[in-house]
Amino acid sequence: MAEVLVLVKPAEGKVGKSTLEALTIARGLGEPAAVVVGAPGLAASLQDRLAEFGAAKIYAAESDELGDYLVTPKVAVLEQLARSVSPAAIVIPSTQEGKEVAGRLAVRLDNGVLTDVVGLDADGTATQVAFAGGTIVKSKVSRGIPLVTVRPSSVTPTPSPSTPAVEAVSVSLAESDKLAKVTERVAEAKGARPELTEASIVVSGGRGVGSADNFKLVEELADLLGAAVGASRAATDSGFYPHQFQVGQTGKTVSPQLYIALGISGAIQHRAGMQTSKTIVAVNKDNEAPIFELADYGIVGDLFKVVPQAAEEIRKRKG
Amino acid sequence: MNIVVLVKQVPDSGGERSLRSDDGTVERGGSSNVISEIDENAIEAALKLKEANGGEVTIVTMGPSQAAESIRKALSMGPDKAVHIVDDALHGSCALSTSKVLAAAVKTLSPDLVLTGAASTDSVGQVMPHMLGERLGLATLTGARKLTVDGSTVTIERQTEEGYEVVTASTPAVVSVWDTINEPRYPSFKGIMEAKKKPVQTLSIADLGISADEVGFAGASTAVVEHSKRPPRQGGTRVTDEGEGGVKLVEFLASEKFV
Image 1 (cartoon, one colour):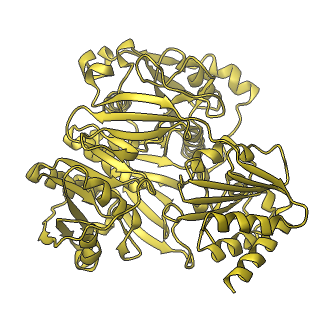
Image 2 (cartoon, each protein chain N blue to C red):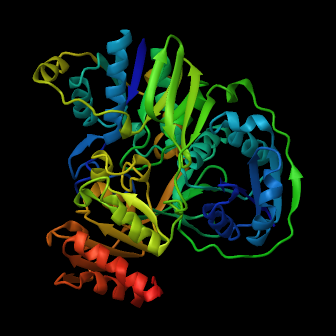
């Protein structure tokens, strides 16, 4: 059975959920071979989890300098493997970096690329959701092998235990791979909440939340539900919440099991980032707010009354 | 400093958007067409650099003849001139072919900096900056929320999931920006009048040394098999809070097993 290369995206030292999803999708096309690119020891630390989700092989490209450059080390490794093992497909988690890796790799291999796919058939037909969730498109790579990035939360990761051999891959970066150098990385405290694009529940606040201080209410509900916190563009532009948590056309696209929109009117800018959520709940005092057109459950009311009461009720039920 | 800004015309995301039933390409005849939102931030970033360092800002657009409207709009913000790549053979081009065409056009301008929006609002593919960087052999710095140029050194700050990182390279370079980088200016009346007189060079693919079988449907590396409108989401239950909205909310969450 042909190999399907899956680029591993570590998240806080573990195998990210998006990688488990990519492995699950890859199994439909062949034997997943996980590709780990990073500092020495990374592959060993991820091995058990990759094995649990069906990696039949692990390629470990490890060196200290690989983290110093954007995108290009991963491209170099995937290019090298694509040429040496002739994979049936290449599957990459669809983060900004993942899409960039795929784009650059596509040029190097002169191979078509499809981004943000939500499904991949055995014959390589990929499903994408376009225009803020309004259109479903099925496409194929017509030159080369399926080279796709998989949108987070597209499939439920399912275990498929295997016993992968780890194969070291030596990477040599060309000078042209070293043009953009990362000179500084600054970690910002983000607490224990799940990553926005990977969370199964997201609680977001909008203009109606009114202030940065009031966002504590959004965070409180999120924490009770084990959810990630998001914000509409109106909220981030007003400085209520940091930009990296923006959900929408110019922010993150999320597709959780449950999306709770608090004080968000539901402009297209926002809908574009959350419309494919499984269940949508909205609280807004404006009965005309477009968010209600997509909400499975909507409460017309003052979020400053509804949300604290909901939080209290959840606490009560949790005992 | 010689700056090229790539500008894409897209259907307005506020209107009805669809794919054409005959060939699966983006319908450009229906709703109004506008500059892809984040490209305006790229234009603004270019104008700020020009104001600080002098030089010239050139808009480069690949698109059908109607994209000329967006080019004029872009020029009214302040850039000096534009290049419009327009050719019937380009219809149906995939991202790879598009990057080939754009790279060829950018090359003729020998810029110090190529600026783009980080993503277009229609395809949201985010692949173009790196495709161009790869084809042109240029450093590629993406997703800037801050951009500085000091002599021949370009430095950006970009948001990451963990915090942020600082990335640096020597010019020439490709830099993509997010909308967090600045607030694009509105064209002034003077700017709108001046834009009418600014030079817009139109180029065909032959002018760029590219043949028709390398682009359009003939040269495409991906193909749409089928597409359909997704049924719009139906609003579900809506209740008005009469003092127990919070409890009702949790009851709904419990019924769906979220609590």
